[in-house]
Length: 145
Image 1: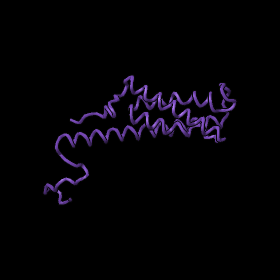
Image 2: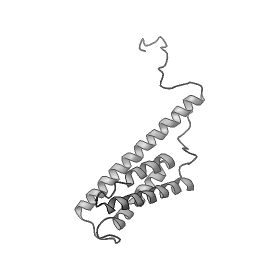
Image 3: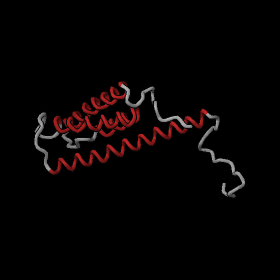
Image 4: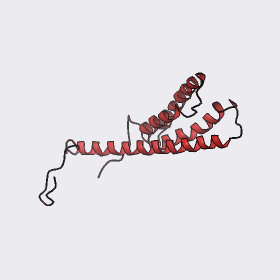
């Protein structure tokens, strides 16, 4: 039986430290997005997608979803004009949010797949099967190597 992808850097999904890491990633992304905005860019979610990737790689799917959900009001309030107030959204803003939700959900899904692959790799290594990149020997039944 294989072990689930429970820990990376000793952060278990649904733990306080996983959500704290997600908050830290969002704070760093907000700071980086403010730097981008000072240069005049209007890419509202540019810094947040890598932060969601980091949060979901370190803390698992729950931390990634938390980071994605927390990003939406931050961007709406702090970066979309008029700045520092919640204003009615335009159709273009709805499109931006929909694109962000799609990209962040794919990012979270791929990071989950990576964590699962790492758990499988560690299980193979712990069971003494060596490198899983090596092909299995031919058992004589199929003739295919």
